Each structure stands twice: as structure tokens, then as C-alpha cells.
Length: 113
Length: 113
Image (cartoon, rainbow over all chains, first blue to last red; front, top):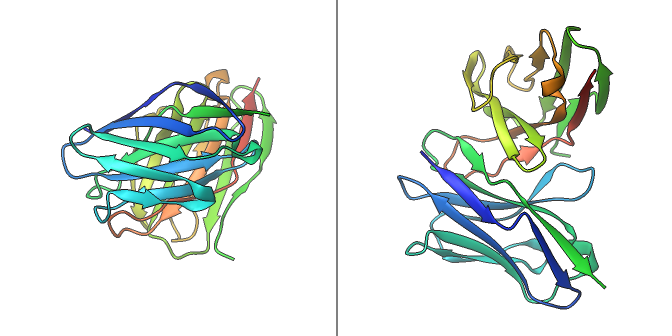
């Protein structure tokens, strides 16, 4: 069975500071990993995804994530937070075979001016 | 424009009154899915469909029904809604190649009194 754990349901950073959102996964087969963002009153939008190519994945809005198999992690980072980054972020895992995607519980990012 | 549409966006109903939330996608995707989002629980899959006339239970299927008679449509049916089904519902679709991105609808906020 696959699962995702997101550490920290709420994260606060100052504008201009590093953003680090943590995601650890469990999968019995090589996983596909995703980060989605949800702005208030909107649906989910893909930020980036890992599909077994490069381990460092770059996404939209300056976000990137690094796949670390040894740590079963796929943390999301951004060097400098903007006010517009305030949103809820979801990590998700798929084993690709049965098409099922399992989501984490989400992390709300607050950016302080 | 490629999109997933859901209707209605907001719905208030009473316990026991049957309702249907419609979902439609224009990307010719085989895979469609329904999720519910609750605070602190992230997104949990209700039902999914691999293609026309092929549906299966997700993690929280109790109290819900679905049908897939056409490729583009995947309605969610609550035969006898109860207050614990008050939630934010998302429909999503994707292709069936490995690692495909899921595209989400804008969400339907349901309140059952």
C-alpha cells in the first residue's frame, strides 16, 4: 500500500525566506510523486511531478523538489517566499500501475510580510 | 480550453434528499475520480473509473454511488445524504499512461442539514 506523510499542517515563513515543505512517502514499487497547490476557493493545480527521470524536479512559480530514495522523501522548496505563495500544498504518490493517487493531509503555508 | 467542470459549485440540502453532482471533462481522459476534502484529512478518494462502465471503490465509498455511461461524464450520486457528508468535493481526470497528471475541477461545496 502507498501512503504519504506531510510533516507540519501549518508552516509560516517571512516574505523572502526559504520555503521548505516536507513530504515522506511509502510505496512498494518505484513511485511517481506530485506536489499540488490549492489557492483559497480553488481546485488543485499541479506544481511539479517526479516520474523517475531527474531527481531534482523544477516546477512552476520557482518551486522545486528533490526525490531522495534513501530517505523516501520528496520535499518542496522555494528559495524566496512571495506573498502570493500563501496556499495549501498537497504531496501525492502514485505507483503508476493501478492508477490510484494517494494524497497527504496538506500543509498550509502562511507568508508573513 | 482543457478543463474539468463540476456543477453545482455550492449546494445546501437536507438529510435524505437525493442529489447528484455532475462532472465533465473535455480532454478525452479514460480515468476519472471523485475526492472529498475535509480539514486535517486531505483528499480522500471516493470512487474512480478506469473507463466507460468500469468503476471501483476508493477509500471512502460508503453513502455514494457513481456511474460512467459516457467517457466525458462521471456523476456522483448521494442517494440519502447525511450531515457527515458535508464536505468539499473534487472531480479529477487523467490519462492512463504512467505518471499522468490529474486535472481537477473547481470543487463543489456541499452542506447537508
